[in-house]
Length: 77
Ligand SMILES: [Zn+2]
Image (tube, rainbow, N blue to C red; front, side):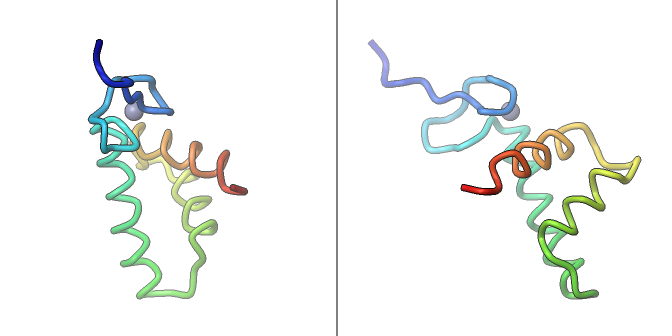
């Protein structure tokens, strides 16, 4: 028996027990947070506005897009 397997809530890949997401989506979340720090230093923008703009941008990658959709769907926690 192994400990309860942790799975990424976005894609279902198995992830490290201490991680909330698989490594791809962990990376995406880190990129999102880093990007938000840069944007919010340059202009007044809320986290939600930032996410909405990114998801509309064509150059936003697939993993980031997944993460934004996930964050938006769980935002009212
Ligand atoms: Zn994932």
